[in-house]
Every structure is written in structure tokens, then in C-alpha cells.
Length: 461
Image 1 (spheres, rainbow, N blue to C red):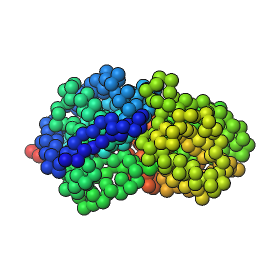
Image 2 (spheres, one colour; image 1 turned 180 degrees about the vertical axis):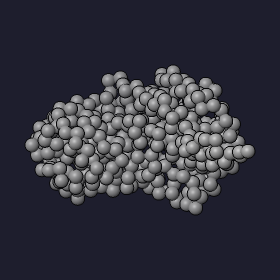
Image 3 (cartoon, one colour; image 1 turned 120 degrees about the vertical axis):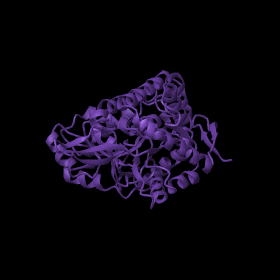
Image 4 (tube, one colour; image 1 turned 120 degrees about the horizontal axis):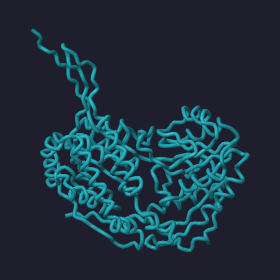
């Protein structure tokens, strides 16, 4: 029997482990979900919505357990109180639009015909969730999938081993049937085997680009729908008319919060030459105020990265960039807790360019590069010079200019004077190697259901 293990970044020791299900046990979980799905879908929509909201409320009541568990599992400081703000916002929003999003599209309702398109749940939805925002990323799909009448099987990353248990516990305790929402522990081989067998009707995966390729290979020939949110290298562009202090505050937070381990974190910044020196100076001062340390300490504002191997990627990218001429500006002496392992000091690099992996490959750590640009055209070329496309953050007082530039940026979301935020009313989606599909919004509901057409000719005397 293989074990799924979480090694805590806090102390490098095993924090939790669970036995992986066998292939037969995995098939049994799917069979129970499939058997339960029709009855679940027959429940009134409002009943399903309210049960999901009760599950969300129950998880909120578990904060005293959830928040320190997150610190132990993936290193986020307890200072920030978990993920409840985004978790609740997303759940409440999809609940508020469920009836409209799932309502039939009536083409004709007359004495002769009933013609309409209804939304029908896929069936069994498989959610493979990541460790960096383990509750928020999971709920993006779990909440609307359940509301839409699907059953859900959740597999969480090994680094956040206990999150799936907590989510299912909360939902089942308020009355969601146990077979409707299940948490499973699976190794990679069993996961791929279940997908290849066509076990699921829809799969949502959030993770690495290579993980997404593995999903597509496993699902090949099964015609299973896939939603993929993969890598990112999100840019920020500070124009000459930007609010400088606001740009520094938001972009530095977007680059370093959660130790830089954010799907839509800012990883590269382009600043107009007229603001460049001031932006860099203010950014270094901003980042230098972090307190790196044990995430269980209420004073800690920057915890360890989730695993020392993730921190090694960041250190290697920084070292490679410096060897090629980049300059590191943040004094490492300000962060004595940096141990060469999971605890990693934040860093800002200048004299960077796109010949460096640091400016093109996903870093996913508390480090960002800043480049000087002369024009929108130069910034646009650099922003698009990436294999990824999740978000882009534009800083200007001119919304028409931002929209005009936004249409040319190869990305899923364009922000103006904001960054590192997921608006549940908008579709969360990406392009290029960031993936395909979309979650949340009305479109998220449509991706978790299929259209079914009714053409009913009425018999008349």
C-alpha cells in the first residue's frame, strides 16, 4: 500500500499521511458517485444551492483548525487568517447567479411548439486541486458543480493533504450526501488509470503545465471534457501616468504575497522610463519590510515556501540571472530566517532581460524582475513574449488606453490598476500554455453542464 505524504515546510518533517486508494477502491468511489448523481440532480436547484452555502458556512466555523493546518501544510502565515474572504465571495456569487446561469434558453413557447435549450449536469466531475490556494481553487469548481447537479470527487495535492478531508467533512455535516461529494487519496498512476478508463464526465485540473499534459494524455480518446489552469508568468506594466505609490503597493503584494505562490501572481514588471527609478526604489523599500519566519508566529508576514524544492527553483533562477548580468537589490541580511531551504527571502532583480529564464519561465516564488521600457509598443511586445497567458496588470489613468492595449495582450484577464485578484463575476481563463476552459461566472456554470435541446411539436386537433 502506497502512502500519500505531506512534508511540512515549517520544520521539514512529515505532517500528515494517508494511504492511497487502490484502483478498485477508486472505481468503487466513482461508482457510488455515479449512482448518487441522478437523485442529487433531481433535487430542486435552490435546495442544492442552500446545501452548498451551508457547507461553506460550516467550513468558516472550522477556522481555528483550518488556518493553522494550512500553515503547517503549505507555509502561509496564520496572520492572514486562511482563505475565507475569497472562498466565501466566490461561493456566494455563484449561488446568486445559479438560477439565471442554469435557466433554459426558450426559443419558442407557443400553441404549436416548445423549443428550448436546457443545461444538464455532466454527471461525475473530478476536481484535481493544487496546494497554493487549496480551498479557493477547489471551491471554484466544487461549488458550481454541485449546484448544477453534478456529483464531485475531489483529489487534493499531497502538500495540502488534509484540505479535501476538511471540505468534505464540512459539506457532509450539513447534509450533502456522502456519495455526492467525496474526497479521495490517489497516486499518479491510479489517477491516470481512472481517467483513461473514462470514469469521469468532466475533469478540472489546476497545476503545472506538465501536469496538464499528463491529464490530456490520460484522457485521450475518452472524449472527457477538460478544464485546465496551468502555468503563468503574469506581467505588470506601469505607464507614465500611473499612480506610483498604488502601483508599487499592489504589484509588490502581487509578486510576493503567499511567498509568491499565486496562480496570478506578478512575476515580471515593465515600467516606463520616467517612473522607473522611483518605482524600483519604492519597491525595494516595500519588500524589505517583510518579516520572514515561522508561519505559526502571529508576527510573521512571509512564511516558507511550500517545499524546499520549490524554493530551489527560485534560487536557481535568481543565480542564473545574476550570472548573466542581473542585479539583486534586496539585502539578504534583512532576512536571517532564510535557511537555504524552504525559508526564502524575497528578492527584486533589475538589469534583467528575456534571455534569462527568470523573465520567461514560471518562478512561483517571492521574486520579481523589473525592466525599463520607453513605449506601449515595447511593453506590449515584452508582455506577449511568454509561453503563458493568465492575467496582465496595466497601470494608467486612461481606461481607453488600457482597453486598447488589453485587446493586444495574449492573456485571459486584463486588470487596470489592480492585480492578483479573481473576480467571480468574470470568467477565470487562460491562453497558450496557461491552459483552456474557464471557471466561475455564467461561463463556469456552462462549462460544468452540457446543452440539451428540446423540440416539442404539440398535437393539435
